[in-house]
Every structure is written in C-alpha cells, then in structure tokens.
Image (cartoon, rainbow, N blue to C red; front, top):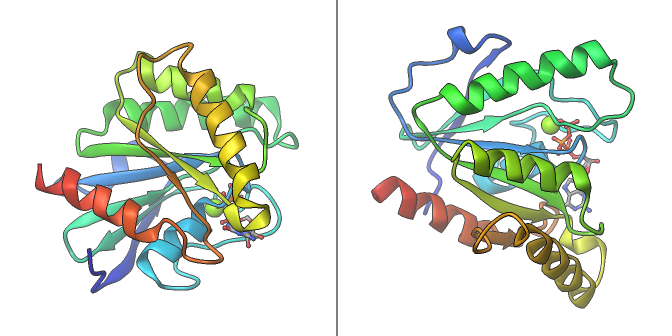
Length: 197
Ligand code: GTP
Ligand code: MG
C-alpha cells in the first residue's frame, strides 16, 4: 500500500465522542513504552505525527489518524505502567475495554509486544481477553533492531507458543523496527487485504 496522506483527526477521552464509525479502523495497543506511537509514525512515514517519548505513559488519549482518507489508525494509551495509580488504571481499563468491545468499525487490534522480552503475563492475558471477546487481533513484535535476529526469533517463538495455551492457532504476527522500517510493507499489506475483504 502506498501512503498518500496521514493526518491527525481528534483525541478523545470519551467513547461517545469518537469520529463516526464510517471507515475501517485499526487500533494499536500494548504496554507503555513498547513503541506504539513510533510504529504508527513509521507505518505512515510521518515523523512526529503520533507523539512519542522515552518516558512511559505519553499517550493518554484515544487518538484517531486518517490514512489515505480511507481508514483510521488509532493510537491508544499503553497498559502496565507501574507508576499509574489503581484508580486511573481501572479507569483506563474501563475506557479501553469499552472502546474495543463496542467499536463496530474496528477491523483488527495490533497488539505490540517488545521483541526483547520473554513472554509477559500482562500481554498474554490481554491477548486472551481479546480472544474471549472475539476481537480480531494481530501481534506486532517491536524494537527488533535492538538485538540480533536469532534472539528476536527466539522470543517470538516463545510468545507464540505461550499463546497456544489459549488459542488453536497463532494469530498473524509481524516483526518490526520503527527505527529501521522493518516490517512496514507486511503490516500495510495486511491492512490492505483486510480493507479489501
Ligand atoms: P506510551 O504512549 O507511553 O504508551 O508509549 P508508546 O508505546 O507509544 O512508545 P513510543 O513510541 O513513545 O516509544 C517509546 C520509546 O521507545 C521511545 O524512546 C522510542 O524512540 C523507542 N522506540 C520505539 N520503537 C523503537 C524501535 O523500533 N527501535 C528502537 N531502537 N527504539 C524504539
Ligand atoms: Mg504512545
């Protein structure tokens, strides 16, 4: 897919105030600092479109970006940030779960997993919850430039294997680096195929 345009549309704290669900939508979610905003910028090739930060917890809102005037990318706040209070964590969960379960134009959730880490319980549980709710998702392994290819493959294999405890087959998955542009074509092709379905 060729990206002709990518623009910021709106930030929201309320599901009721989201843009009309009149175009296919893809949400990006994962632990704080896993690289959601960086991946979005890499995919659309616009540096700084989604705000990134070295400090976890940068993205606090549901942010809609319109791509090629045809589909939405949604940047979501991260989960699992230890310094967040219990009450704001619960608020986050309610809000995000509400969005993910109710948004009729949502085609697929990209769950971002740090490719440097062993399988994390919080990621596995989140995937399992998506499965229970029958929300389609794909895995995006991030920051692959930070270690050797074989090490990435090892962690990817471990996580995919751990998922088989919950799922009959491994969901679609992509190995990416926002730094190097790795995985860009494959993720965009996947979106194109889903859009054309
Ligand atoms: P929150 O919005 O806080 O949940 O974070 P996020 O998941 O949106 O992460 P963000 O894109 O802000 O990136 C977090 C940090 O990781 C930044 O310092 C990025 O530069 C860095 N980073 C993200 N992706 C990559 C990558 O592929 N390679 C490398 N080397 N660094 C990355
Ligand atoms: Mg972010």
